[in-house]
Length: 411
Image (cartoon, rainbow, N blue to C red; front, side):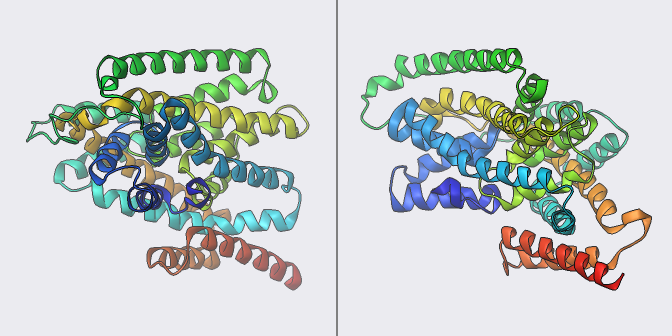
């Protein structure tokens, strides 16, 4: 249910999880929920999905964690796959092209709001402002995004430590699935961490070998698997940390056209589940466009491979640490490193937003009034809570269709 209703980005999804897990079902206490949330925010990957995985593990052990985490992702992944097919199959249909073109100014508003939301939390000192400015200059000059993130993390971790925040009581035992004994917190917890980590690496390796041997997604399967494993591992601080980089990499590999970065973001923002599901959209198009023809089978394989390899690392990080969530220390050095990386995230979003705005507002190099108006109205509607993100995106698509029909009628 939460996976199907989880619109509104990580904040909305976490709020929905809190209402269901803490207030309504009482599966987790307030302190444990906050401790688990802080852990998931420190880990790479989609924090809401990892939090759902932890809750499932707490309720039903490893199988519960796998089921909860998978079902959290499944509705959004299925919907994005269908929309990717509609986009790809409708490329030759003028009204479909007009609908997707109409979404693009709304996506500019979504990116601008993301920059504001994340920047307000991340750029809280002259140092973080300086890091963001330097990162923006470096990324604009073509510096590799992973390198900029790594340098910022090192700078943040090297800053002086001021106090240490803890997640939960230092004297607390570790968490355990419902129905297990206290012995779980000792050797059993360590055994789970080692076993799950080793199993995840094995599963990743076997799945990669199968994808490679089967020439999945028209032969692009192994490349898709590698790119989107890296995408998750680099997504410290939320999906917007790495989504701009993933989109640019996909364009560089010929999987997406430059303007389709809009469409990928629109699908991720307007559908339930984590924003990182943009990889499902990219994977479908990468498979669909293999060879001279168009292949639905290869597209579905590409979507499946992209989704699977984006989320294997997510499970592999949260499940081994689940027994120790109440002992996880949100150490100050790690926190400072995350703050510095957050400044880089703002820079990356601003750079992405500038490129998207230029493409949406200046088609053919000439300013267009309608896209600018749609961006402004979309931003105000979402920021003030007048309409949900999916509704705004659909309305923008409708504007694109109407504009296309009126232009044809005039001409």
